[in-house]
Length: 228
Image (tube, rainbow, N blue to C red):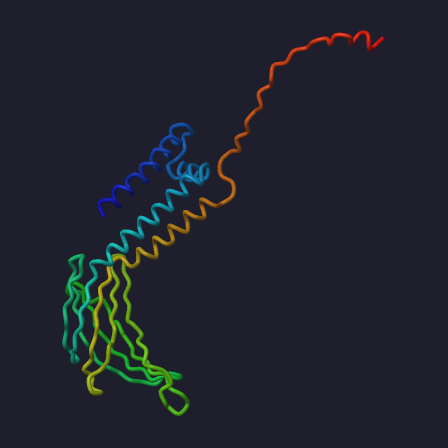
């Protein structure tokens, strides 16, 4: 994290220096100076944006080292607490299990009430899906639909592992994955930097003038004789 902060500070400093120079020279606003700075030297500043995208990637994947995971078997009304790496306490309360048919599958859904630091944060549902044919015979192995709640700090993943003996007692796996959103954001910055770098144009064309070579004039011997 310290190395990431150092690199980010260096990139910000490069943009700041260039923008300040344009603001002094051309009396431009900060936004206009930044826009024209990038437009005039797209390869350089587009490359800086690519570096920022990679930097965000590194920080986001570093955050995955602090993920939290816990399994619990809960009856309706029972709860389990999981503490996030950011210091928040999540309370997951099992509300019940429902089973219904939908198109070509039989769905078993478990619903969980989520509280963040004691405050309601909504409901999350995870499902077990068994695909069947027209005679209600299973066609594939059961699949799981993970309940996901995304945020800037962390994502909540709730997986319904199964139910106990056909009752409403359910087995869950709770996951808190930090900084997942920033992986996608870093990818966007990376693509933006690549587009800026590869976009045609940007900067005036510098034409080198050919220096005129100093010459001399001389009369060839015998030239007059040839003309006669």
